[in-house]
Amino acid sequence: MDKFLQLLNWFDSKDSVLVSLSGGVDSALVAYAAFQALGKKSFAVTADYKTLSKEELDTSKKIADEIGIKHIIINYNELANPSFVKNDSNRCFYCRDELSEKLIQTAKQFQVDVIVDGTHIDDLGDYRPGIDALRKNGIKSPLLDVNLSKDEIRKICKDVGLTIYNRPSNSCLASRIPWGQRVTAERLARIEMGETMIKQLTGFQQVRVRDLDGTAKIEVEPDNVLLIYNKNYLEQIIKKLQMIGFNSVIIDPDGYRTGKINLIYE
Image 1 (tube, helix red, strand yellow):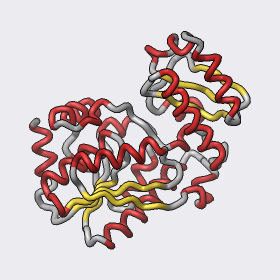
Image 2: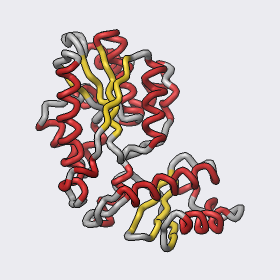
Image 3: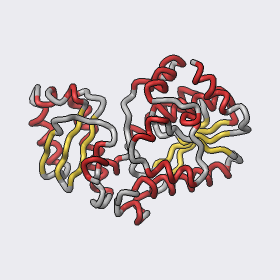
Image 4: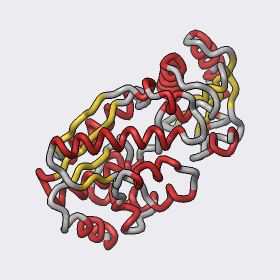
């Protein structure tokens, strides 16, 4: 717990803090530490920007309620941003740049000087232009400052009793669309519906439906790849995905891993 104490100490010199709460385990730990250190002078903000799944939004509400931190939900539409919609390799930069602007506006509204997020050391090993946008706008990353890894974050969350400690990593729905293919409301809707349907049917926690110009490429945990062919899952999945607008369906034989779409489609 030494690093957790370092994390708590990180907040000692702060008068008040606004935490960007995404619905994931990383920002959950930051929100927990902020609340433990600052109480009512800490705030959590979740952006419902139309590429966040309902599952993630609901999880963020649950996390905030579990911690006891004041939770603010801000609404805006990333699909109104032409730079984001064109979906080039800097899409995440445009996303986080706009998010930062909204967080800064919210911080001013609540008279908060410091804004923090859940970036940690493992995030530095992947292509993450969004981190550059956060730095540009002065967003701080306490998990990074105390050198916490994903495994350490999960362990601390478990130790302090946060139920989210073993929740699979997730990302915005736009990350399922390869660079160079436009992000549209229609595509985001069928991706979200597809992932929800597969999770409900199979019970798998980690599911990605990549929208490859109308082809649904399904990624699940490597241990579940063979299982998706059992119990007539595949037949039902293909039928339902075609019903919501996909032309064809393929299964990734290698399974899911973080940052994979960056490697395949850059």
